[in-house]
Length: 201
Image (cartoon, rainbow, N blue to C red; front, side):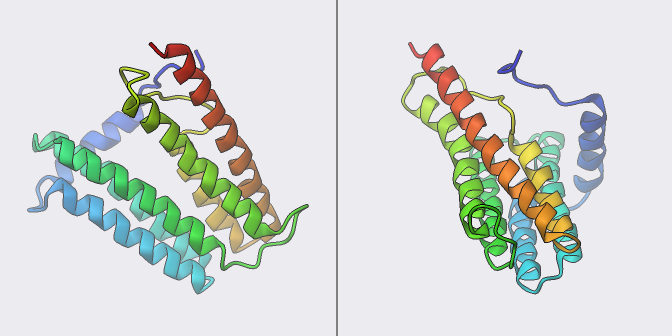
């Protein structure tokens, strides 16, 4: 079913469990890893400005890893909390915004419209995917958060990683991925809006 909440694969669960065991041995709180993800995102942005896309891709992967580790450590140490979940959500948005803004500094080719228009389109719709979910619950139209759609955050982060990686080899291919990401994010936000309206009390 399109809108069903997709569970994590067994491989991902095992990987998260392994990370939780390893990193919970260190004297750091889950929020430390959450903020570390933000620092890696800033580093990604700086590296994109410097046009070092290979290292930018690696830094972005590190930011994604921290996003897995904070939750794994929280569960392992039994420190999961609403404050931690809130901070994690806010940092997730900042991570994406930082990467999108850094892409504006890259001289991508014009495909029908200037590259900055496509990057802005992708960023706006990526944020709308998250906002539509939050707004439905905030307005008490749904009891639980709406999830699902064509391009959820995991897929979106993977797409951004490919954009960064390809930027060092083929800016044209990277821009095609940006366009695809914008279109798929737009469709995802519409899917979630439709689901919220259908579930509305």
